Image (cartoon, rainbow, N blue to C red; front, side):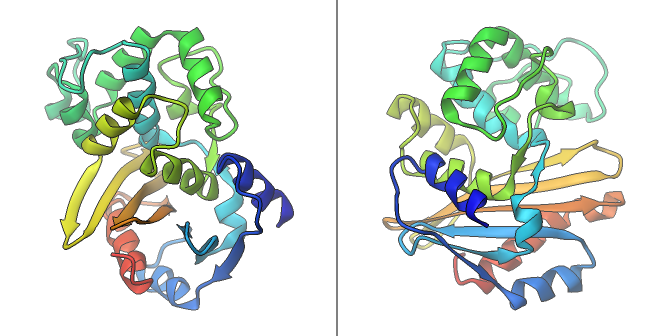
Length: 260
């Protein structure tokens, strides 16, 4: 387990105390009841504690799929590939597997629809050199983007673990990434999902190999006043009916832990 915690500490930039892992049988039952194989991990910043289900899988790196749209947005805004989250980007005019993707739109709308061609257009505007520099500076997963600037988060070689997702997202939530505060605030805004009292939920889904069997992600964070919990879930998608379980199971885990 030492390599996991060492990597997490590096990502958290300056934290030197040990981080505890707690395995939750209650979360394990939720996965069993949902009839899916996967992992969930939540990072409680104030308690320096990871709590979740299936530590081995939580440490395993997978291709991030559309969860990378968070990073793509951050880098695109920081290098000026778009001036705002509402500046329209071209989808390219080709038929898409989701009809609603077949129009130009800004990042605010595109991230809600998980619009692949829009984010591919953004990646091409960023360019390979600036994308590679951005991914490395953010310490995102294995930081490898290969040669195809508009495919590496869909096909690899970029990979990241659930634990690394929580470490990255807590830095975004706390305005601690090596980017301007304005850029981080804009991206936090477009991934905000819902609010319950003082608790605010941010998140992004991903589906590797959609619409076919593959891997499903749901990652994000919850703020409750000054308290932050980041989280990451990934599951095996064996059929299309498994896809909605990403958010449903993730929310059930957050509820079981008293986070949201």
